[in-house]
Amino acid sequence: MTTARIDARFATLKAEGRAGFVAYVMAGDPSRDEALEILRGLPAAGADLIELGFPFSDPMAEGPPIQRAAQRGLAAGLTLKGTLDLARDFRAGDVDTPLILMGYLNPIETHGYDAFARDAAEAGVDGLIVVDCPPEEADDLTDALDANGLSLIRLATPTTDDERLKVVARRTSGFVYYVSVAGVTGVKEAQAGSVAPAVERVRAASGLPVAVGFGVKTPERAAEIARVADAVVAGSVLVDEVAAALAAGEPAAPRVLATVKALGDAVRGARRVEKV
Image 1 (cartoon, rainbow, N blue to C red):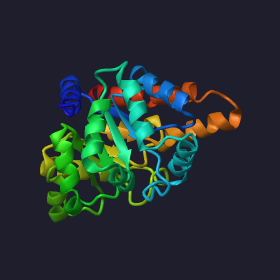
Image 2 (image 1 turned 180 degrees about the vertical axis):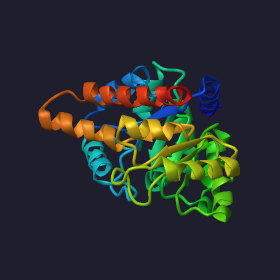
Image 3 (image 1 turned 60 degrees about the vertical axis):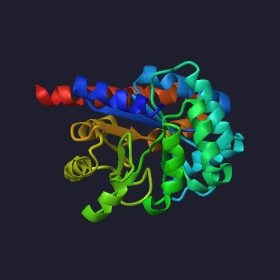
Image 4 (image 1 turned 120 degrees about the vertical axis):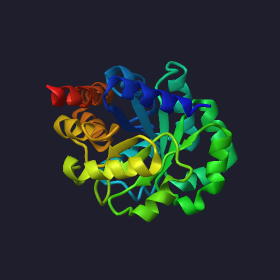
């Protein structure tokens, strides 16, 4: 079961007494070849888990940086099938790093739930985050994922109350993604003071690790969140580096991977600083 990679990685992080760093990048951004170069470089740069966005024309939960990344990915021809091909190429050289697809339901429905789950597992994908699929409508998709050993990772938000949290936790596996701010990605900054009690609540309700994303832009903020969460997710800041590289006429991978290293180092060192 491919979901075992996620469980194994969080077990290792717990044994090491630290949070993990989750890097989000968009498939095909800024081109297929450069996206593959970035993917392949993420683990060595400091990513413990990877979220790979599949481009969609109407990414409703995303702010401008990831919207633009999705447009670049679509312009590069990276459909859902192309994203799975990209995942397969990454997995051929890395058998350990958990790889989670993140996106929207429409392309998955078009692909077909059973076919998608089968193809994703074959490509070496470990889990799926579907931003616009409420738990009440997810059973058919979850059945297909379960049959192929894939985790469905759900979102909890600042407005998720205790009763709703029970629904969110049902049939969730791998980890829960806690959206730290109200609104879209890349706009507001996460605040550790408000995140800490929410993480405890989500962890208690789900029995799973909690990764915190939306609003993590700097190493300092990443370190603060790493002291209270099981993992820290950064995405907008990474796709911003792709855009900056394009504007400067430079290769994207070095800029993205340097930012991943800075954020990953901050996450790794966060709890050591706390203990001093």
